[in-house]
Image 1 (cartoon, rainbow, N blue to C red):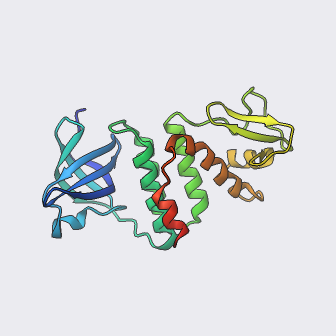
Image 2 (cartoon, rainbow, N blue to C red; image 1 turned 90 degrees about the vertical axis):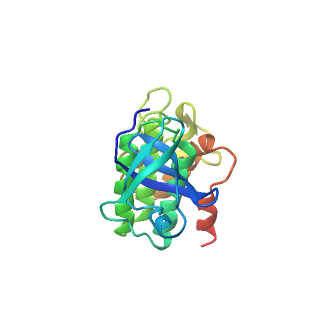
Image 3 (cartoon, rainbow, N blue to C red; image 1 turned 180 degrees about the horizontal axis):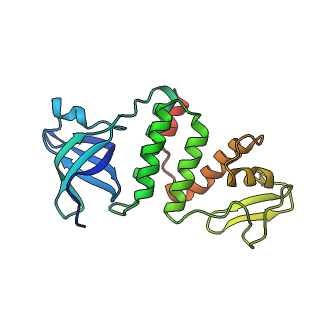
Length: 227
């Protein structure tokens, strides 16, 4: 992939690599890129922080790039408390779900906007649900929220279960884990004033993401539980 010089980026994760370098996962409009940053320990390593808008020059044509230049640009999203855990959750989702070198400029823009909204103290749950849904949609895993797998409009008083590979299926016998039509239609309109809509959206996104995340638990969720 031919990479433009000095493209926008965010650090998703970094770890020590060899004696003085770091292996860094970046989110860019060109996708998730992994690169080696030389002499990343000490003062130079202070730039390898998450949630800081960067301009990075990547070198190399292989899957593992090299960082030629890295500069901070714009305004960093300073996250604290639950907002910080939420940002780490977004980063982990992207590392686990976003294929390497698969361009998703919409995801990049939505990520940047979500970080600023988190830093501004906006309510966490609507922001997280919106990001999860946008990510699923961009990766081709989304499904209709206003109609069932047969193409019929959702009934406000109907009960539905998620068939991850198909969509929402109407059921007529009460069973655990179902969603009612009113909650689902509220999600479709992002109307979080409907009672139960946010908690139902969290359950739905957990179910939708689980099949793609696999059995390994998310570290950020465990940290959130232990906070």
